[in-house]
Length: 472
Image 1 (spheres, rainbow, N blue to C red):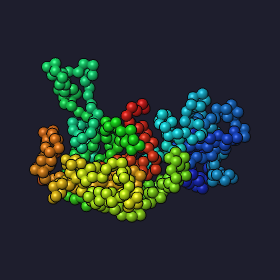
Image 2: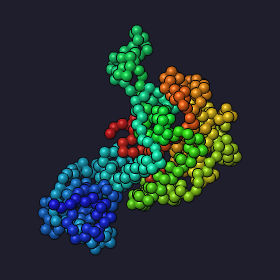
Image 3: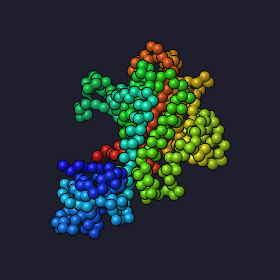
């Protein structure tokens, strides 16, 4: 029986397999001179060259078109061509699936550069393009490195609910979940109040924006936990950095103060980027050479940007210090610089790109712009919050030391109009052996966007969910 190999295996260990009979399967990327096939199976950005035998059936040649899926049995040989070190001299070829040439002309399978907008419109096929397959492989390795980091540092992976009754942030629009017939909604006493007792969960439910609060409860027993799952926000944000459905990583750690939380977040990000540089050389090199065709940025280098993250410790400044730096800047920002405001993208970009020129951690934000669960500082005006700002991308991590004191947490909930009756279970964790604890949230898709250098976050997730777009 002839052994089947991935193209990556053969290209990485070519000398070991020379003169051996091998079996490969994949999709045709190019076909030239009716002799040479460039075959790709998705395992690597690189193609392997198949050399057709001279006595191949001419009827078969007519069926060999770009996008066609084939099975090849042949002998692995050293290549005399300059573009590849090895090639397969074919002995047998069979076709799995042909490509309809009429539809092919309308598809993104054609061997030419397409706009990223067109690729999104054919999201079911864009996996077959070099740019998107490269991004997806990198996305996989980023996800793997995240689990690897937490596993090696004693964290336990937990799954938090996707369907919830609460908004962890206390603000923002959420997607409602219901099984009720929208054409026959039950009302209480024929009024305008919906009777949710008739709904599946007998209460109003939503898709979760965060698993943080549930993760906190686990950390107060297991010590170190993390979540890695989908989150949903029904905000009409048509920007290059926002999605309606995205993935979040949220570690929560007992007995951690803000300083330890910042140390963890910085170490975590550097671990991921170091792992990607070491394990995604081929795909990073491809993006380095080709991404300008799509992003059209001058003086842009993915590897330089990634290595900058590893080169220096992240600069740490308080929110108040950040405001002073922005106030001293003669440049007029579109959004005014006032203590107590949330930093806008232009402010974050100035701090990272112009002032410090490497990542920045801003901490101790005003309590009025942060969530109810963040620990109040002694000044009564600020909370133990921190955001990590990256070049080009802005905020990539947001976190805080959580408020562990029952009375202060309850007061904060009432001040921010959070329903403490719905969060009775969250308050309970502060009544039974409460401890200082901290955590943060990392937007996975935004991290993929930064690492790959893509301008638009819709180009780093397989099937983006954005306002007016849920087609695939």
